[in-house]
Amino acid sequence: MEFFNNHTKLFTTAFLLFVGLTIFVCIIPALNNQTNNAPLPFAQPLSEEAIKGKAVFISNGCVACHTQQVRNVDMDKVWGERPSIAADYADNHRTDFWRNTATLMGTERTGPDLTNIGSRQPSKEWHLSHLFNPRIVVKESIMPAYPWMFEIKEKKEKGDVSVSVPEEYMNGEKGTVVAKAEALQLVAYIQALKQTKLPGDAPQPVFLYKKTGELTTDGKSAAPKELNGAMLYTNNCQSCHQQNGEGLKGAFPPLKGSKVVLDENPELLVDIIMNGYSGREKEGFGAMPAVGTNNRLKAEEIAAIMNHERTSWGNNAKKVTADQVQKLMDKVKVTAK
Image 1 (cartoon, one colour):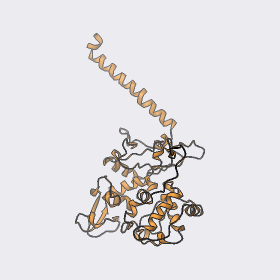
Image 2 (cartoon, rainbow, N blue to C red):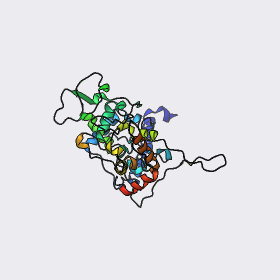
Image 3 (cartoon, rainbow, N blue to C red):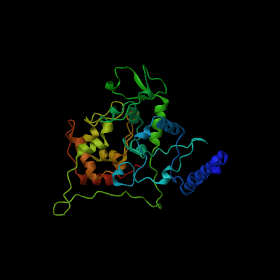
Image 4 (cartoon, one colour):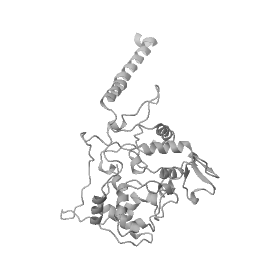
């Protein structure tokens, strides 16, 4: 009992026990992890602007709704080319001596996973419009708007980055919406989020629990259902080109009445879907990502999307077949990385 009555011995023992546990439970495993895991050979470090954007991401609580981890289940294939591995997070460094930095893997996916968002959606214009008011590009979005990252000026000044905002989202205010430094930094961080390719000789993690085809009552595989082009368009294209196909003025070109969409030869449209396009940036339109490649769309899915675009909003072009699209995919090849 003398030990428990002697506060010096009691608190010294408790302190030494705490230090010992910290060393063996926290510090040694952390050092071991640093030894066993290194950044991937092709990993690109964050730029200074992106590092500041990461701080903005953290301060605004974005991790509460967005994860940065592609799980090894088949349903996560839309978020990355492969499941995430420990090396993806090995390049996180301490903020300073006293503070560690967040990995931002997240625990809840209310919004889309951001692991590979820099490849899925590289357009700065899209992200700025989305930050000002997510409903501009995704009508059903429940994400809050971040208008305090922008200011409205009567006239755009040299060096300002303006944002295309439809009149109905201006709340009656007049002028040009200009992104503040924190908005540009946040977008720089989001654009930097790209999944690093693994070396060719490295073991490739696989996605598990893939859904198999439906069976009929006699146990045979059911005939494939006709793909819903409107749904595929919604999932892959609508956030930029809008539900009505009219795009967003000054940011994303319209598909309604588009010469590319209506062309009898659909080769250019297939090329754009598979490889992306940046030829209209001088007109103020953002670069289009390689949607078909990034989302690993099959010829049947691309054909369904194209047919929706070619027959909707007053467009009346001839439909294409999956075989046509497959031949064109082989012809244009995939140059997107």
